[in-house]
Length: 102
Image (cartoon, rainbow, N blue to C red; front, side):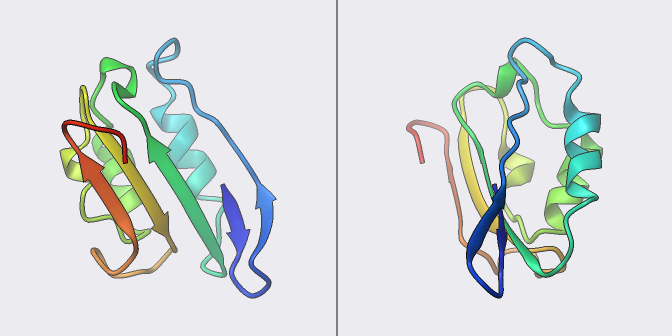
């Protein structure tokens, strides 16, 4: 979900299905490339992440939004990020679990 930081207004939502379309990582990175530094993004991966680990390109891109835990996401994990382009890694609200939803 994309939120305008100045107005805190919802702007758009996208869903990337990794369970049935395991090669969506490139599309996800391309979408993140369209989000500017004046926006907030709320991103989550629930449970299995389609059984695949995020691509290195996707991990690198999510580091640009401040994620510290994206490196740990994989099969059976849950993850949430409220990020912003240009945020230092670990400086934004984020949650990760190997055992339960976040």
